[in-house]
Image (cartoon, rainbow, N blue to C red; front, side, top):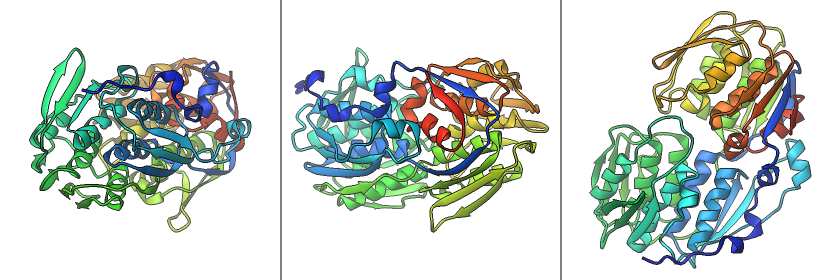
Length: 458
């Protein structure tokens, strides 16, 4: 095992994120009552960018990743790649002052040179910071025949074991050992296999698909995840020279190849950020056009939001969604159950719960993906929301008005739900521990401020 790493002090200054400079400002102050009006550009998707960055390990050379969002999670992964020996640098620098206060695009092109990756030992302090970092395991194994990665961390939203990853990599011929919190995998030769996932796990599908591209023979993944981010990763791998069929379906077939080549790739729009802004308009009222997005990624969400009374216009060709609602119009209650794509996404459950707290009746939101994803409910109650949790469902009795209060963010999506709830509350809402927010949203406060929200980072 080659344990050679770059010292943290040697990591390029280019890996610093706009939000990193704001670490000392860990609170957002939201004053409710202002409608949202204007246009916003949607950033590249966090959940697409992270596996795309991991996939660069599979080939030796220079990649250019366009529309890569500047987020804490992205920068954690850049640190990880740098520690393995990759050279990462941004091709165009944003205006940090301007980007922090407006809706100007901040995501840029990231250049990654993987030619000098020498270490197959991922640093524990980085992988334990973010669950998606675990996705470097398979690509390192496929390229070098060996990898050592700590068990992953991330938001505490429920049990997310790595057993699907373990079973899949073993099926491909890997030897898997866990010792002192680290997973070590080795393989003299990886061979294709038929793999059936017990659950359509996004990360397991991405992980096994990346690894299988360099396996000998054919791999079939049954009950595969169908999310747009999975399909986008597969299309990038195909552009690199992989032979993958069935993307966007529950059966993905990968014919292994001997080598892959670097590519220039553009990260798809963030459908979760898009949905979050749509629900922000639902709470605050107003008229907002979201540009640079993909309406078709949000069919299930748009269907439900229209039932609440939101007026929504979509233009797939232009990549735009217009959302408008009169400020004092009450929302209709809806019942929603989260499910894998193309169902209603779990990553928008907290935001919808916040929105339904302002409805004119009783809504039931059922969480089927993660068992611990109602931690935002106690915080919403501090605003006066009438919500009770029974098993895996939140029963929400909507109110005409909530009142601002100090709140604490508990995870990434919960933090967004508290911020947008504050947009509709009377008075001031202080949301603390917003480092969670900065992991997955690119300047959420700046974008909201650009369309009329009264919000400050303190």
